[in-house]
Amino acid sequence: MTSATRSPSPSISCVVPAFNEAASLPTLLYELTQQLRALSPRWEVIVVDDGSHDATREAVAPWLVQPGVRYVRLSRNFGKECALTAGIDRAEGEVVLLIDADLQHPPKLVPRMLQAWIDGADVVCAARESRADEAWTKRLGTRLFYWAVNASTLIHIPEDTGDFRLMDRAVADALRALPERNRFMKGLYAWVGFKTEIVRYTPEERFAGRSSFSLRRLAGLALTGITAFTNFPLRVWSSLGALIALGALAFGLWTVIEHLWLGHDLPGFATLVTSLFFFGGVQLLSIGILGEYIGRIFDEVKQRPIYVVGAEAGSGAIVPSGPTGK
Image 1 (cartoon, one colour):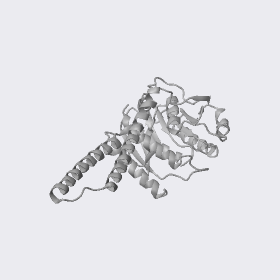
Image 2 (cartoon, helix red, strand yellow):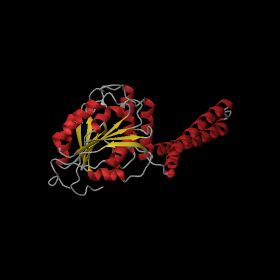
Image 3 (cartoon, rainbow, N blue to C red):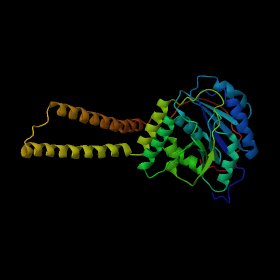
Image 4 (cartoon, one colour):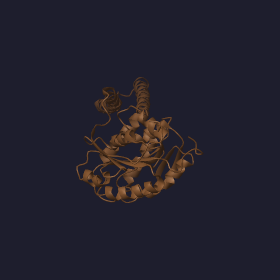
């Protein structure tokens, strides 16, 4: 569908993953539905409750009385990537919008993103203007992650972009067709391709509560991204192994030369023990990296579902007007 044939008021599906966001959901739903009503008569908001322990269900309940808001509760906490997948699987609109529930993604940016789609973009990504509000350790980790994942792969993941994006129906269908269980959505968005436009924005402060993404979970997500989209760690350790082997060979030759030509005694016990510990550590680390990749293979071959739905309620305000490409 070219920009010349795209409707100025397409049907819009908005996916909102939520984990313990009861305090912010009423405000988000009010602001978001106001924006959607102004943009199109056909819209839906799909709130995916990722096993919340607070009153998330009760916060959404008043919005389920009339068509427009849908509620999907997963049977447990599967993680944000799986919650996004569950929402995309149920989205029926010509465009699909992904937005967080904590109001750091401003709903007022949606008209600008939709206009970029009307003008011809298939994916409209919202990218942070700055990370000055984050700790230097997180900024450094983010920079290292993007360097590692983009260094040795044919796809490029745009820096400072997250899940806040608007996608054409074709992009959503392409994502639905991807079968992997270890979901790293930022990588999957980039892998499917399509014409992409970046929209810069400044995130708002969290409306309430604290982020559920701890440093440990962020590190785990980064590890999933690296092992799912690049062989960079394997290549690094292969190169390191080759360098160590060459270094060991050179050291051995030098030792022989010293002993035979210069008459020096061979290095003693301390050198031997240090070398054994060093090479043992390198081997264990290398086995650990191999284990991460083998573990991903193990998860994939089990063919377990990406998520399990515990309950659904509500209905969208999208009246089918013909094939949607699903």
